[in-house]
Image (cartoon, rainbow, N blue to C red; front, side, top):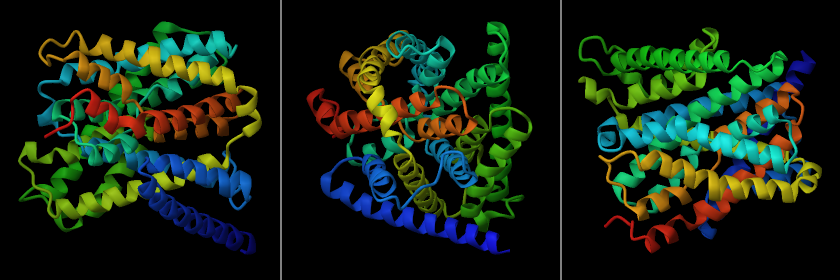
Length: 406
């Protein structure tokens, strides 16, 4: 009992302390007018590596629980915020960015990591898969302050939500090959990828539709007074069911959020939708605080120093070669969207790395995979640089390209 009490006290202190640090960091970020995620990371470094007030290891149950819980709730909220009605003109671009686009990014960055960092090819692609997705948890707050023409904003926000699920599936597919110690079977890997994605989509549709009906249907909506609580149940339930069925829990929770958030298209009306959205926003903010402060506290400075210049070169390829290739390959075939060069250049610049890559990196570190320290240090630098360099200059770039909304 005494050990249990000590563990409970430790977890309570950790949550209270990190959330308090997160709130203070959020205020500082507001004063400095920079994305709060960057300050969460720096605060984590200070309280972890500097003051040694947070020393939660990446392999601990508490750390893994926070990573999976936070990722699940953030992905559900990302899906919930997408409006399918706004994707009619750009659905092809979003689809290409979200699946082939992630694969293009992973391929380019994977070969860069192979040649520059000297990682074995499979581990290089694992690193690339981890950082290949963009971040709705960073992009959506940025676009609340920077008004962008709707077509571009909806495309980038939708891509960031969709490709998080794709990036996680790709990561776990490669990780399964590495952990299994089997030879690479391209056909088998593609099959596993499709099963994980398709099964996750089907699971998410079932759970999301059920949740939407129970809170929004005139006749069967006997949970209509519990719309806010239903968000948590649907998010966690879809992930759990997907994981139990050995399909992608992350894809399941994202699709469940998509179904829940677009319930009006199916003739359903969620009571107190504004209150539910406000609650969901606060929950995802708390999860971002926990994930990024913890990530900062676990930074391996020895690995960062050792691989600093090579990591910087890989991230330069990531930002200035892989991203433009991905955008042009995805947007140019979409004749219906009629993309201008300015719009495509803006999408090339806006590609922050964030929550899901951070969570995936932590899970890989916890699994004890070889080269996990290199993957973690490059992921950390990718998050910090894309947020500080790209997210902080979004308003400036939008103004220079003439893409500010009137």
